[in-house]
Length: 441
Image (cartoon, rainbow, N blue to C red; front, side, top):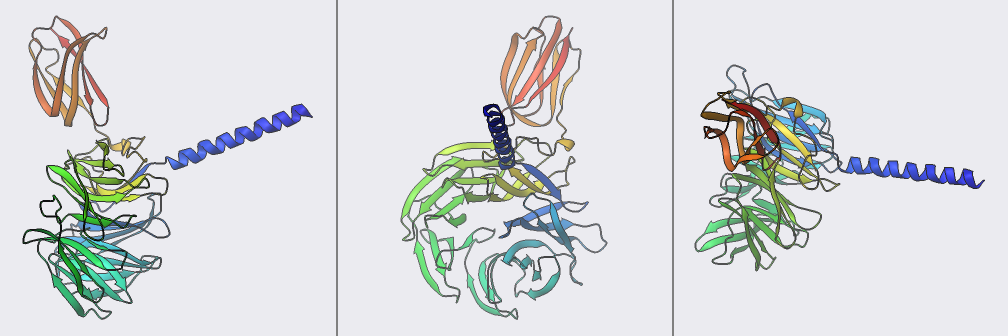
């Protein structure tokens, strides 16, 4: 009896351990998906849907005669797999249409904002209506209430009614770009803009009334960058440049903190994380990059995804239920001047645990002439920043030097004795080493 109980107990423990391992593997799941047309695709916006999955849009070039761009719209499952995709062609005589913004009204109604028209789609991807907007420089859908739509243009915040008639329009300077207008906890619309003496904070009601128009902290580094309201109801502004700046201020517009961090080539999106910190993403050195900041404003990490293609960048980021990150951007082609829409799910530390699109990787270290008596040329298939080491066959280091954005370099090996050596370059971001043997004559 005791032996039977012991066996049952051990079996139960084994099952529990297996379930824990499976759950952990599921929690750490990473994936990557590419979408798009046979030509070049340029991403514009992704949103997470209320019932799981994602909706994204962008512009795709086409080879159809007389048409330059089409709008691309896709709905995916939570694991990035496709539910449906749509290619929207321009209405003649227009020769171009661009997908710029998406918005979920309900699980059964989605909006697609294009350059001149806001389309309506049901959950199956069927177009069920559209509204023409009174200005061509559309940027982003901000809100939908009882058929009225609030959206941004290049230099305006506007609202149209159910028939597409303009209800109100508010001008402001230097507003190009997305993620600059938010709907706050009072259901008002807020944004920052440059004015006399510094940066101003403006708050507008659904009826178009300006209820706040106030200069923020003179001498502050705050700019008209991306804006959000965090879980503590404080506002957070982020903008890029040679350095990335983050400024927090409260609902009374008192500056709470200002911090600077490493700069991105292009800073595109940020989000609050479960630990009340922030994750920022964009592009650095032609790769998708992540900057993690804790709740106290300290930098936790700034790193790149493994670079497999000519160029990748992210324009949107969502924090998944397991703490990982889903980014939407461009990449996935192993040839220059072409790109796909790219969805990537990372772990909670913004790493993949698996290579990005491993079936398309093209890493290579080339050394020539080989053999050589005096000078060798070192060439890589993409720029590498890291460490170059030359060792002999028993592992002794003969030469060590740092390299920055290395694509090609010339190295004098005339002083080396005759024999076989190993050239190794290790990328400091992906930590992947590349090797090539050389023969010194």
